[in-house]
Image (tube, rainbow, N blue to C red):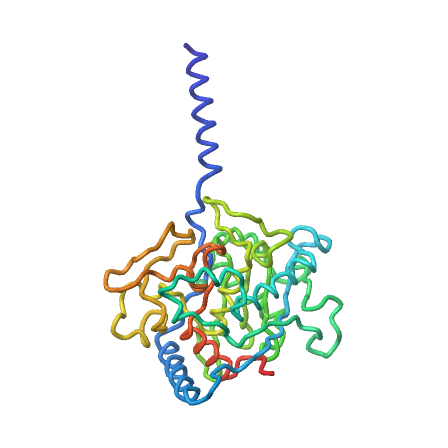
Length: 350
Ligand SMILES: [Zn+2]
């Protein structure tokens, strides 16, 4: 009898262990970016309307921009290519992914459902390149890369030690970024680190342009922070689909975060409210249907989470939270916001 009880106990513990191991990461959030204040949103929406008016009489409303990226790789002394001190190949592998997504040349764009073809943007006008020189004009030993051993920096705390996103963001914004940012008028700053403990894939700042709003980028904070195992599609990036873990091997955490950096809000911002004033509510894009779907899992089939919305949710938009393999489009109104951000002073005009 005693043996039987022990066997049952061992079996129960084993089952618990298995279920723990396979537990979905319910506290994971692909993005820690928070929408700026209503004041910023109103100001930016006005700029977007101005931009649309001035562009409507031109044959091509798109201006082409090329944005140089500097990737700050934070590590704890590992040799290049080991652990979070990711290889040059992995660091570089993100750039063609970004360029495909922002130019509408990503292969999976052909999956956009017919109901969204009129909203689909075929190009944003944005392309990215790797910075070739540092702020003093010196050629970089590795194109687009600065490797930083955080252990050798005074007052820097191990990025992997933060147990929530607010602590992580505070340390990056107040300490790490201030000490390592490259001129944000000339570079898009990207910081890569192990940030799994914070529960987010990354976060971004919104464009400041010429006004001093307190909750958007400034000269010390501008840019994006991304989990190093969600940057690119090789090296430390786990590949393949898993129903229990977010799948981020198409580089679209970066597409999403840089979308914020260029003025885009989440498609589910505001949830199901704002059907009569889509320019001034929610994500401020009238061609992204109302939605409250903010899950990182790809939906099975179509979703319609808002009764008042006539069509389905655009879960395949880059500014939703879904897994990489089921998001593959920007819309025309989103492009108007991106172009507005650039026209108002964000870097990189060619
Ligand atoms: Zn986001």
